[in-house]
Image: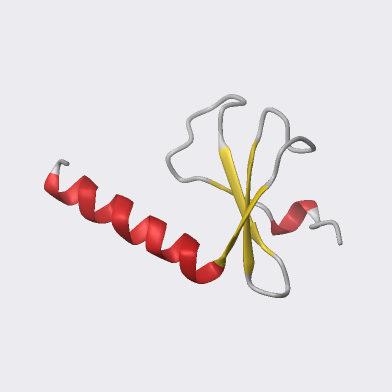
Length: 66
């Protein structure tokens, strides 16, 4: 099932241009990630819990400078 364009959210860390990460969730709670330069290209899918764990890890490393 294709994800509507309105469901994709651009990363808040993205500057202007075509090098942005876009994220969406499908109805089953699977998180989808793609690159804005080629949105019809590769889409990475991960369970919502796994994506949440990734974000928590990245945020904790950002705070500690690791």
